[in-house]
Image 1: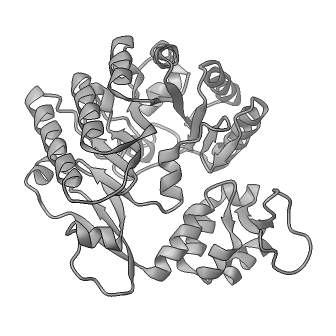
Image 2: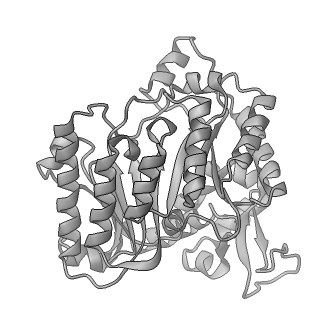
Image 3: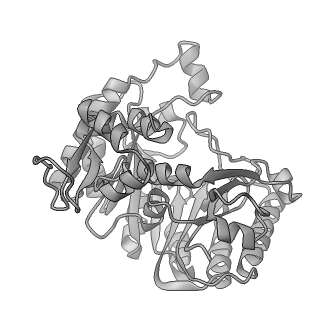
Length: 397
């Protein structure tokens, strides 16, 4: 049994202007009930397939899971009842401030939730309006307080590079994030996704185009502010007090198999598990990993339409593990780079100032030759130009 489970709750009160994740705003009770029942059927299917093992993290994303209130509590209970869950497992629920209440947080905690990730994005009302967020600044503060008061781990999401976002406003958002009591904070630069409302607004001149240079400056400011407060960056966009890193997301970045449940959910399995569950039948011996995606349509998913399958060769698995590992501040072991046949690629990236060799102590490698405990990580420039690094690693060029 993969140790990590993701459940996609595809409901939102309203679509944010920048979002291209699959969700619907049809909150009719019958629609919600149909999806919950379908997800419970998937849970049953996975729990009855005879796989050994225990679950270490469960993550409810979306969409906006908290918008279905009591239905979410039911889903949490159902997931934790279906699987053998390790004591001390991390159980995360994503939440939007407008759908958070003390009563709901208490109920989620009683059901087994240990961690709540609140989509704040900004503590500035003008910036929230640009993003099409339906919550207010006061609601964001209240949601964080409700989670913190219940004793659950609090994570918050912030967004930089918002059109019109001034430096002073960004610093105030960062300081308010620290005042919220969050032990984990994510900072994402705003990107224009084709077909979103924000993309249309920018293309018609109603909103200025996000400036990647400003976003990069704001990411550097965030790193400095949070590090000074004892919340260092541990991944490209994530910061945490030591011991409060997201275990679920770390599983993604270290190539751990995970189950995806619900419409538009994605999962990744090793080839043996994929064969056992009937996800694939007899692929060639060179296949090492199977990725799948459920239909991004509730009706198609309810009808049991075929999932989207991607087979990765063993060499692609090795390259992917290095690529994802370079997202982490700790980087990747030299042995993994050798196994993936990427030494020359990383040397080229090193010459470009995008990656560097370090010892396990965190010190740069100065002497010549290969040190057994050597690791590779991105430099600060490589962090800000991560897409260039990842593309070079994935293509092996």
